[in-house]
Amino acid sequence: MERESLEMDVVFVGAGPANLSGALHLSRLIANYNAGVESGKREGKSLGEIQIAVIEKGSSVGAHSLSGAVMDPRGLAELLPDFKEQGAPLEAEVKEDFFYYLTKSRAIRSPINPPPLNNHGYYIVSLNRLTAWLGEKCEEAGVNVFPEFPGADLLYDENDRVLGVRTGDKGIDKEGKPKANFEAGVDLLAKVTVLGEGVRGSLTKKLVRRLGLDEGREPQVYSLGVKELWELPDDRYPAGRVTHTLGFPSDQWTYGGGWIYGMQNRVLNIGYVTGLDYRDPLIDPHAEFQKYKTHPFIAKLLDGGKMIRYGAKAIAAGGLHAMPRMYSDGVLIVGDSAGFLNAARLKGIHSAIKSGMLAAETIFEALVAEDYSADKLQAFESRVKESWITPELRRYRNFHAGFRHGRWLGMVNGGLQYITGGRAWGIFDRDHQEAGHEAMQKLSAYGYNGNGSAAPRYKDLRFDKQLTFDKVTDVYHAAVGHDEDQPAHLHVLDTNICATRCAEEYGNPCQRFCPAAVYEMVEVAGAHGVKSEPPTSAGGSSGNPTNRGPQAGSSLGVVDREGADKKPRRQLQINFSNCVHCKTCDIMDPYQIINWVTPEGGGGPDYVGM
Ligand SMILES: Cc1cc2nc3c(=O)[nH]c(=O)nc-3n(C[C@H](O)[C@H](O)[C@H](O)COP(=O)(O)OP(=O)(O)OC[C@H]3O[C@@H](n4cnc5c(N)ncnc54)[C@H](O)[C@@H]3O)c2cc1C
Image (tube, rainbow, N blue to C red; front, side, top):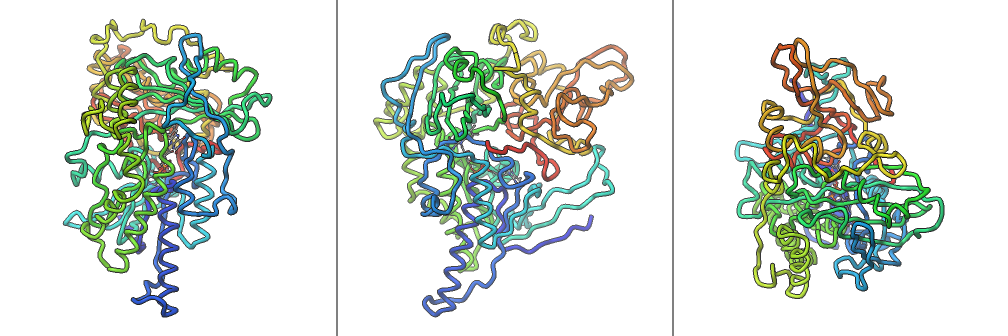
């Protein structure tokens, strides 16, 4: 296939805060340097016009940005010291901080806020709006910003030097054949490619494996944040108020907690984090959040309100010891893709911004020296070590690992670490943590019979569509859209396991850990065992090929096409058009056989105001 090649100088993959900050900072460093050289104030040769591109898989910059978010302004203040005067979209300055422990029926207010959750002077933001605003700043500075362009593959030379990125093809039908609107992806060639794909980046994952960049590091561990925005009928929860909760509905072996942030115009931002290293195979993070809202303290807060938006996204929680090597020939890894998030503070925006800026400074030096080798680019890691990022992450380096001994010991560990500067149990420099999917126990080990359907965990949970919502209804509020006539972007590498081993051992946990009802085990009969009824939509426009509404029962992406017997049997159905790009399936599948790849550009959620 003929592909167009475009020569860029630097390509940033992913338009999140990390890469947008990196692109903006780099463009300014180059402009200042060139101006200095041209005016004779600086020695050296002008760099000329350097082409910087940012590509983003979402339909617009910010469409896939989902966060809490309370932002520590430290990073943004370094990037744009006058960010307020420049009109950064800030919802509110944090004025009140609360921390509660929830029992089943009571909310006990802690007299002190745990120090990592002290947010006074920080800002509540919509990451969607902040990212879109940063995208505008980049464009004003001359950066080429390309939404609807997913990075589908990295390009390498024979020595594994990264040469750039291949963007995804457009117009391929579900059988893999080109349609009338077919457009081949473009090879964007770059001296340096920067991966800022956010959590569990699909290109980052492949690069790390290919080059062994995680050698000697702890495995990355993750959580899943599930979030809704609510419109409240009155001023009961002011903008600028921050509440965090621990306890209900998590059990003591499940890492989890809730957040409630007050935004402008009586909008309440509420969500729940579940550690993706839970043991109980029947846990469903979306159901945990729905259950959270039934607590009397939360239900009262939401009473009379209206849910207006929904979203979910994974969080990289492993900390300093789980960060891969962040450079190689022609490539750098920044932001959540490298694991810069501080899990104890649930904050990553400030360090994502800073990591992007440090990458920019490293690339600027490489451009001046015309040297893009790993030797040159390793200065990025030195910069990270010398910046404020490393002391911050060092202080909480064993935070998440402590929770594998249960909630209470995890908290004791957290307290000891705070006093001892991050030592695990106050003694060890590094605590070991297993990959999250390895923590999931089998149904039998957890004491469940059969497929676990009799498990008591959610027996009282009802979706009343007032306070609590089923996944399909929630997904409708994420405004997800994917052209349905394209190959499924969720690749299950061995479908034979689904109806047999996985059903017996774990009760098909993909149906639960996915917060968007993408995975369904369905009963099928008929010639080829393929569910053949047309897609039905629970609120979206199913007649439109680009569906912006959730799917329940789509036949697209059905796997396991073998077998012509007429007996009903169960098989996996993948409703890929519901996917909110949270990456949980790629992370949490116990057999590690789900591979998330980028769908056609522009597909996915549209997180306006999230
Ligand atoms: C539920 C939740 C709550 C959080 N709360 C807070 C908080 O209160 N405060 C805080 O500071 N932080 C919080 N965080 C963390 C914070 O959102 C992240 O640390 C931060 O957004 C990381 O920025 P990033 O640029 O690295 O990645 P992201 O913001 O994830 O951006 C990555 C971008 O890359 C795009 N992309 C990915 N792959 C490709 C590809 N192959 N091709 C093209 N584009 C691609 C994505 O669509 C996305 O737009 C929270 C995160 C979550 C999920």
